[in-house]
Amino acid sequence: MEVLAAGVMRMAGRAINELVAMTAVQRKDGVMIDHLAIQCADVTVSAAFYDAVLAPVGGQRVMDFGNVVGFGVPPRPEFWIGPLTTGDGFRESHIAFVAPDRAAVRAFFQAAVDAGADVLHEPRLWPEYHPSYYGAFVRDPDGNNVEAVCHAEE
Image (cartoon, rainbow, N blue to C red; front, side):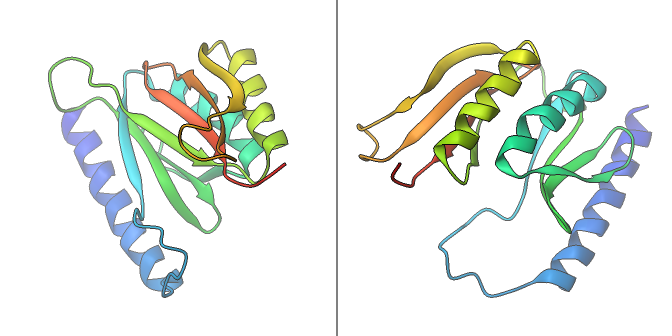
C-alpha cells in the first residue's frame, strides 16, 4: 500500500507541475505558497470534511487520485491531502484558507461544526493581528488547526 501511495503522490506531483506550467503567471499579490499537502489517517473522511468546509470559501475538489485529493479553485489544486506515509506520531499543522468576506468565514465555521469538527475559536475579530482580521478556527478529522480568515473590512 505504501508503494502505491508513493506512486500516486509522484503522479500527483507530475500533474501539479503540468498545471503550474499551463497556468503560471507572475504573481503581484505577494502570495508565497504555491501548494501545500498534509497526510491524513483516513483520506475519505478528511476529503468529505474539506469538501464541506472549503465550499463556503470558494474551494472544491480539483483533482482526485483516490487516496490523494487536491483542492483549490479550478483548474489548479493548491491544497492536497493524502495518506499517512511518513513520520511517527501526529504533528499538528495550522492551515488558513482565505475567505472573500466575513459571511464566508461564518459559513465555513457552520459547515465545520455540521461536519463534527471541534471548535477552537468561533468567528470573531482578532485585532491583535490587525483591525480587520476576522477568523474562525476548528480541528479537522486529524486534529489539525484549520482556519478561514477574511482581511477585509465589514
